[in-house]
Image 1 (spheres, rainbow, N blue to C red):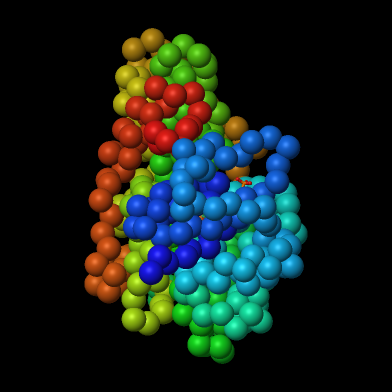
Image 2 (cartoon, rainbow, N blue to C red):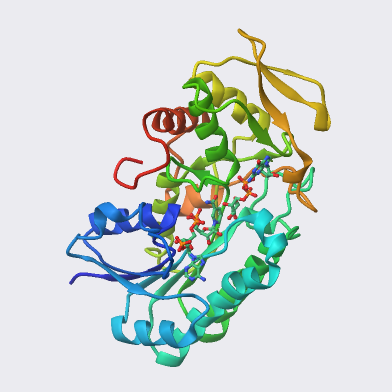
Amino acid sequence: MTKRAFLTGASGQDGSYLAEFLLAKGYDVHAIVRRSSVFTSQRIDHILNHPNFHTYLGDLTDSSNLHRLLGRIEPEEIYNLAAQSHVAVSFEVPEYTAEVDAIGCLRLLDAIKDLGIKPRFYQASTSELFGGEIGTQPQSEQTKFHPRSPYAAAKLYSYWVTTNYREAYGLFACNGILFNHESPRRGETFVTKKITKAAARIAQGRQKQLVLGNLEAKRDWGYAKDYVEAMWLMLQQKEPDDYVIATGEVYSVRDFATMAFGVAGIKLKWRGEGVSEQAVDAATGEVRVVVDPKYYRPSEVDYLQGDASKAHRILGWQPRTSLPELVRLMVEYDLKHDGYSGEHG
Ligand code: NDP
Ligand code: GDR
């Protein structure tokens, strides 16, 4: 029988790849999308007419809407990917971030309990839970949490409430603790996409400079398409559990920028330090990257490196895309397209 999956966040980076993945596996995919004054469906436009893809207006802040949809659809699997997902933004809108990222998850779990349905539940947890203090890496399922933003604190609540509904009510609920993952479909205000888009535009003479914040931050960046498979695998196991998903490889924001500009044909030479640090085009001497402290965060996550050995062992999951490959994929995409399009990205 056709399995029904319910997705929140389907118009986002991960949701769009997961929807494609599930449709290819023959699922009926039911997804909520938010009302907006402009179209926000670019990443899923190419599947909107798929006979097994169904969208509904919905919002994680609206309990009655979620309750009604879950009661009507009775999905076998639920993937909660919706979130105010920008860490820096969460310092500006902390209360809204908690409303969506923390209480939104509770609303789903409680609707499931109240309706007496028994879906398998995936919660999009995050490496931001760890806080990334130097000395704690590599971070595994055993590493102590230390959230360093309103976003991370909200996600900590949803991590624990997911665990609690598993323990208290026997729900098959899993936390995927995913480290940063990127793609051509990444939102344009996250650092990787901001860099690859700027590198492409600068190489094409359409932009002069790229302005960044903390160049020292180190991240374990993987490819979103590889990571959505891990979400699905978690819900296919005998027992519900929590898993770190990561590559284990670490690069700084500066490394990422050097690689991206390299793919676009610009060799960067770095000079200066701190707020005075700049990167110039080694061939022309033109300044291409500058630092502006307005992009610094009130508290930063310095060093994230995941240990995904549990996922390797139990899920049989492995990342398939190295960072240099991912950077190439993103820059080549941005050299061809200004912005992103679901179908090709
Ligand atoms: P995106 O920001 O690309 O997508 C977020 C999605 O959530 C969008 O579809 C957005 O809708 C939707 N959304 C936001 N607010 C609400 C709301 N109030 N009600 C319903 N939907 C809402 O995020 P990603 O795809 O990158 O990430 C997916 C999830 O995984 C998020 O929960 C994120 O926090 C988490 N995560 C992401 C990681 C990453 O590196 N990408 C790593 C670890 C965790 P709209 O299009 O209308 O804005
Ligand atoms: P992150 O991703 O905060 O790790 O959260 P982001 O790409 O925003 O930042 C990564 C690091 O780069 C530094 N940085 C900048 N960041 C942005 N956005 N813009 C800049 O100009 C800039 N310059 C330097 C940041 O300070 C930071 O250290 C992402 C999101 O997808 C979360 O939802 C998810 O939970 C985590 O990854 C894992």
